Image 1 (cartoon, rainbow, N blue to C red):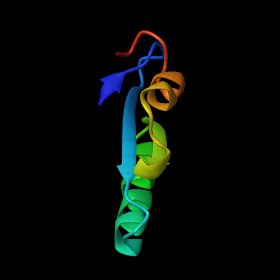
Image 2: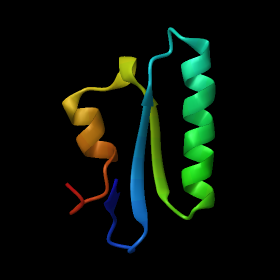
Image 3: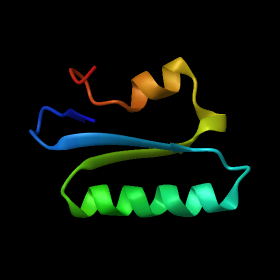
Image 4: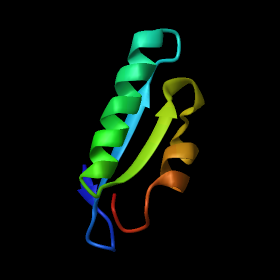
Length: 62
């Protein structure tokens, strides 16, 4: 987890879609982080590439 320019923490939640329970848990983690005022990036690992992660991540947070 890191902090964005807005000062809010940013959390990335990645899950493997081949396991249905993993997606459910990832959704719960993302909801909990959002309820704690974090900016959340949620994605399946099948869709992740270096460019995807860098494009989604807030500038200045890496």
